[in-house]
Image (cartoon, rainbow, N blue to C red):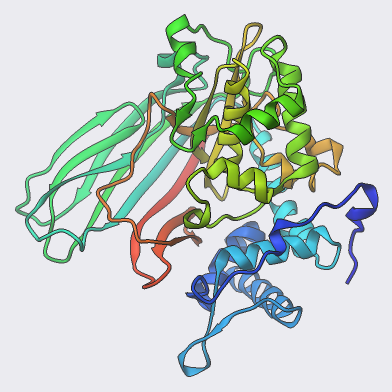
Length: 437
């Protein structure tokens, strides 16, 4: 079914979304895939009519199976899928104009959530309930472990405009009744030292309240205006940091794009254009990235929000432009955890660049949405500003390969990390909130 011949408005490059998966990754049961699709394409509908959203997700999944989406047969006629393969398959068909999900469900829902957040008066007071459910089965009962929970950053403390302020946190850690719990609040996180209970699962949570006024963040001339010392800027020029690495392919790409510290905004425009014209936003298996993740991104042309932000930062740092990665929760009616880049300019201070615009603009074809988050941002609950402020993973044992799965919950969403091989929970964050003007 041709719905929108996007390929006619520009050259289509080899699509990395079409690359095959394997039965190893096809381990998630159909019910969890439908939960994921409800979040990805029918989040607003699910809030008002959950069965209708699930019916729409079921219909879409059956349509993709008929079109060739692979799955693995389980016991009792059950079907297991690779969630990355499902999303990438649906998006590839949408890009080719052969399926309506990407444009008319996923992108349409994302645009609606963003527009809904824009409407109404500011500032707003957000009352958040955040829980992290952690599997500690690899520890002995009674062992002492250190676990973390993300918390909002009050930006004024790091030199930028205070779009998030007046933070209040009430900790909540569920362990055995006789367990001693040492809890403290640090920038961007809550830390608790707890004793592992017999059931080997721990809930660390908090009731969080903060005020937010994104007005300056929405203005590219004053969005993240601030001061930065020479030492600060040197920190954000390091050649290697987490996923960020200045390798030969990264340096070659920066040179090809004409990235120069003389004009950071022109440099970002060139990087932006390249990401839209030569790369694809999708879902990535991190265990398959190799020793140099950004080299894999450049080679395959496939990135997610985290890898895309890291690539922007690496390209900027290659040419002497200070840049960093931030992450946190998008405060839409259906929230999600997200990464974006920030780039330092002498005229404007720190400016944010969020590649979610790749989807919002239908791969850059819709000019109205292409630059929505180019040098500007909406309301976010930022929790990490790498490398200085980070949440850090809880005391979990990561499996060889894992899936990240989302599902709807009352007034929010849950984001979980699960083992590909066993399906066991590693940890799951549950984020729900209410807003007061």
